[in-house]
Length: 486
Image (cartoon, rainbow, N blue to C red; front, side):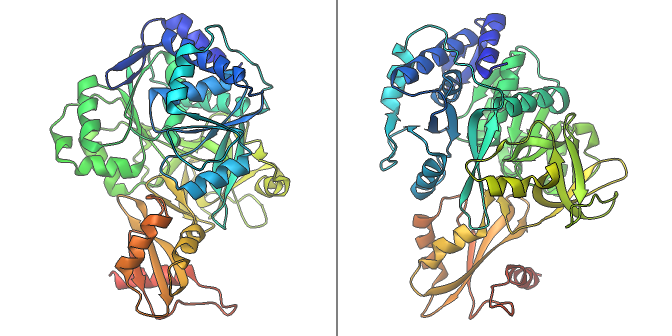
């Protein structure tokens, strides 16, 4: 089955029922199908060929969703970019993905062969040829590109296929959110370019009305939840913590049946407060770019197992391996590995990295965890130094490299400290020459790093702890910070 067929069938089944609402603008299922057809045909008319990579750099919007699925209908490969990232990051991702075209809202210096700015995009959506756009592709050919960072902080391109997307959709409907039903409302507050976008096609299939926020604001979200009486939503834990701290939270009447969450670990206290406010409606999904949103899930009725990320999705096999890739019994700590049809095809043009990730046929997640006697998994640490703050993967080296450009800084260590709101609170410690001012360095970081990657705190030390090989010991830095906070 092709992704475009899902949209076409929904138009046939649900017709003029509302599909997407953004502010005062409403598109029916028929409208959405027609708009994606017109834009898909316009993209082909612009000279783009099947398999060409087309990047989308737009905030949450109706146009963003139309572009996402018009690209797939036209047989092109969608490349998802995040508007919160810096220009340098965009340029790296465009180059690494070999994107031929980028759709954006007036960002200068992107440098692709074809650029479609928002005014032209609106014209293409309106004036593209109105006929079915249906360029089929092999189920295992590239469908869309996602990104993950490496130990150097540079993102690798993750190749996802039609097959892996269809599996993700089906396990969501079978395991995570089987309650989705025609005519109900899904409130989208999280970025579509991030995990939130995974819920759109399941909603399309079930005839669910997607109400979209262009930008997350706690008060607006809560008022929309009350106004629309939304039944479903997705939040990263940081967003939930922010909602619970908003005074409006206890003043509105909501009707959520399921609030799905993921993207980072959640504080037990935040979950306790969330259930006290909204009821036992929370459903967790655990995944990563290489196995998007589909490794394990934890249904509301299992949230008594504090700290668990749940059991494997129906068609996913999950295990705990030691460092020699031997399976470990329940209760023993090791690396979480998985296999199944939901995983990536590989890293784009990186066969050695792909083989390393899929050692012995299992995708190695880099997360350290345990499995209990009932088959529930628990993430207890990360094998590498990757941080997850506000649902975003953050690689210390990338932040460190940015701070190293500040005059006088010669050493940097970036670590994550436990935080109920952020998951990992990004903290930097620097050393160097001269009179280093943490506030001046923070101001410098605002011009170098995206908001999600900037440290929340910066400390100046005389020197940083190092190993015998003269390598900075991030764990020792973290331990010292935790000790000083007691």
